[in-house]
Length: 128
Image (cartoon, one colour):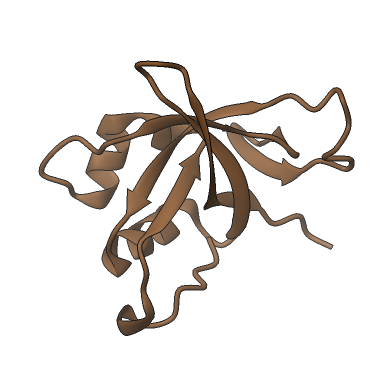
């Protein structure tokens, strides 16, 4: 995962969208070495597709993100609050993935209300 966050002094908390194993609280807790379960919020994005890269799901941009048949991708958001946590996620994802700015909708578990937000997600780098 390309880490375009600069130095620790430049770091700003980042809302990340997860769509694979990082949605599992115990997995994220282990990777980030958290003492408590992470707070994940249900969310979805459009304009991307999930493709398998070997056994792993990879998020890639849709050829036509405005297409009517674009299917929302379910996931979860997590607010990364430290440079160290972002670096751990970078190590976990590897060099074939990069962070991209995205628009998403968080979904309230209590009411189902959808709230539009800007965040980042790990997307697969397609070799050229």
